[in-house]
Image 1 (cartoon, rainbow, N blue to C red):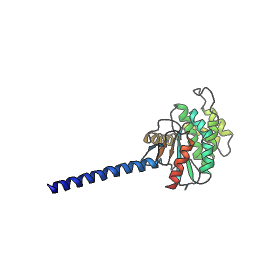
Image 2: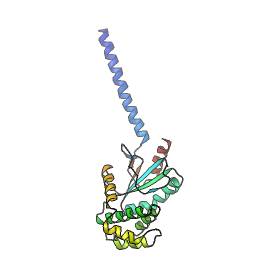
Image 3: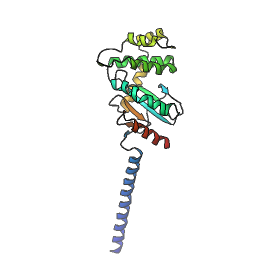
Image 4: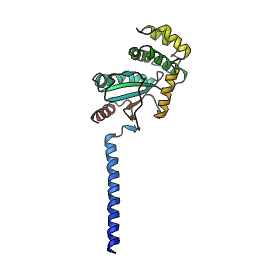
Length: 223
């Protein structure tokens, strides 16, 4: 009888320890990622993607964006400049952009144009990227504005872009393969809205909550 009681006590102790370990793991996980969003097994690969900042920056921030998306334009005008000032320019963060085609043919056309510019001149990509977003109308967002003519007009105003080469690339849709690679990443990381922002392997719930972005970056910098 005594032996049975001892065995029962041991089983109770083991069960309690296992439960406590489980609770501890949950607490640790929550402390690392408090209400910031979904954590993935890996961060999006950015090899071959446009990158702003130092290549060896310890933290990677990725935007899944769409040139046709009004919220992406708003994010680029409000959050992005502060992120660059606080973290990209200081060498702590490298930033990358992945095309997300949520608005049909215009999204595809804008993305192909950006990919073609990037192939021509990686250093010129970000100026084209920003200028194309600037051309997005502030009203009547659903009107057709991303056209070959608009793209070439934007390109004409930027040095180091061979406009004739870009026009040919658009005709031949030579940037489409790179755009398709981005679409695979959109599906892999279950992107549901634009913009979607990832800090390393964590997708933020609210891309416009800059304090949450900063907090998560600081946590990732601390390791």
